[in-house]
Image 1 (cartoon, rainbow, N blue to C red):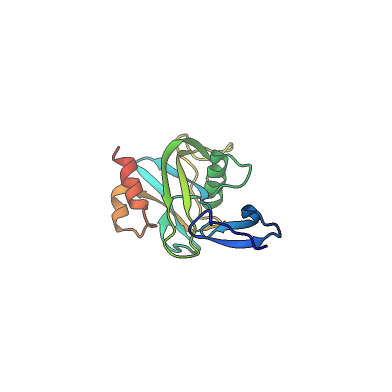
Image 2 (spheres, rainbow, N blue to C red; image 1 turned 60 degrees about the vertical axis):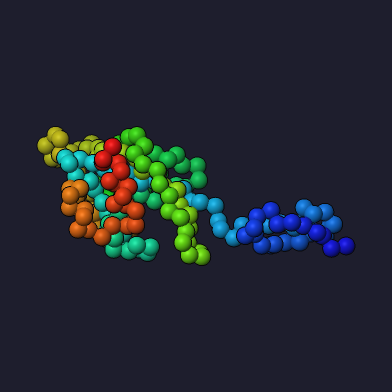
Length: 174
């Protein structure tokens, strides 16, 4: 006997059929994946913000906040600290949550992202050779072509990742 079923989601497609006649015998998969979780850091010091220039797709060559994916078993702050260190070489003290935003997929195959950005401050190295109050210089790391401090007013002339300009405006105009 053939199983009868209603699709639980309008965009679902059957992925497996079991041999029972129960309506629950068809397993459905959503066409769109669940959102991915990412973190970023707003490193703000001396009236400037630290941005990285993306080294890979998507958005290769555009400036953005340091950050990336949260790994399983990793806290949000641990992920923010790790990603920022990988991309800037800086050790950071992670502060409070600054911003939450999402990137919605437009085309098939794109990923839905939920991104939490934290305030952060550089932490001096244990054997610091610079005078007190001076932080280590950032260096471009794994996913970054370049890393640079910007004054907010200078960002109007830069090519930023989609939505970043509006997010920064929201954060700094509070």
